[in-house]
Length: 555
Ligand SMILES: O=C(O)CCc1cccc(O)c1
Image (cartoon, rainbow, N blue to C red; front, side, top):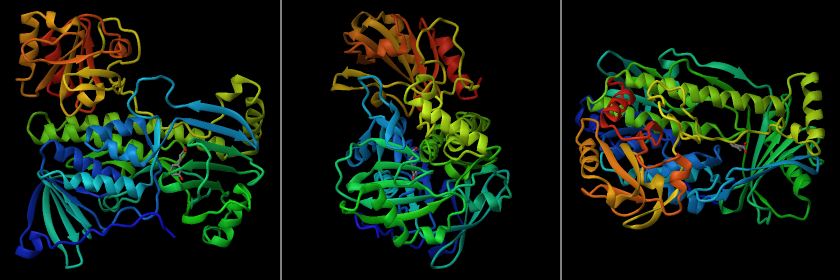
């Protein structure tokens, strides 16, 4: 199996610890070169941080566990300098359809409005995601990768973490100021540290069949309840790159995972679905069960947990890898400020605060979908079936159909890092919101708001005509860039070029003003991870500086 992808092999290179027989010290070590570890290492290295990335394997993910990458994840990957590659190779889609038997009962569109750069979702095999992220790491000086390097012990103390690494040429030790753990759902490091992860296991089994076939089905998510080709169970279909199609068959808890993986069991299931005439080849087959659970805290002194090591959900809604990449997005800028001495270590508590809030939202959505797909009792099954029967005719029932609510970024509305609104605003770009994209023009031509945002604090100040910005305002904006935690000032305008060399973003289609409810004088403060931190109807740099202090725990 696996005919469409050639696995890269990453060589083991003897590290200086083994060559020179010494204990190396590193400012930050990331363990695990899956999507989340790679993203964290990239984000830190992009900010000029020296990073060591350790992985126990020498290639990318065997088979494709993750499939769907959401619009927001693509925007994060854009900020990490590699979004285009994913969108070029991936299959973009916006529409999902849910069927009961052979009839469509419900559909959704992930991109209900125009003028966004990225699609609602792309589907791309996890091995491509990892390969492209590895390629991005190759472009970043200061990011060292070590493959075939298995962490066998991690001992934290007040001022460092001591790590033992096993390799094909023997073990060695190193120390690090910060250890970022991205070693997956079973997280050996979590176990080594005796830390718990709590939640529930779902009593169901699913078969993943990735098949290669030429099919002209649309690039949409199709989900069936009780289809004639797989009665009383559910089936999910997604198109991936290279004409690979992901089919998930619900099997029930009593299915034998060894038997069900055999081609002689899998192929008839696929033929029942696609018909005898359609030619296909099996690419990858796997059986999975899942859990919804999370750690109580994601930061433990100098050890920080990201992705599946910290929290897990069912695949329905594609909230696993997408939320893991948002962990990286949330953690990297905070850790960098702490490492640079520009923020206290308490800023890392806000990583747990914000990302455990997100994990709870993901677990809640994932649990609801799973309960709908796998009802726990006869009563729940009767209710579920009644909802499905009613949904085709009655809109009220449609909203109760739940085959997975697809990943969207978390609105960090409750975060202690936000400065609450004191002025009136319409719309949803509230403090804590992930910033909405919008088309614009710069002196380089047409572009997108989010391409101008991120990796630093920024202040967006709106005027009608940038050339009429008064000298005092321009001067106070320019001074924002000189603070310890620098804020890049930018002017958003319908026309004109701002004085004093301030960057001007032309809101060519009026979408920025509309999406952010901007009026002349409106000022937004955004965080390095493209979340809104604060906003006012007029620029007051003392309020803005206080909001930066609050967003960095310097207040
Ligand atoms: O469409 C969905 O809800 C998720 C699709 C998915 C994600 C990860 C694995 C998998 O087999 C299916």
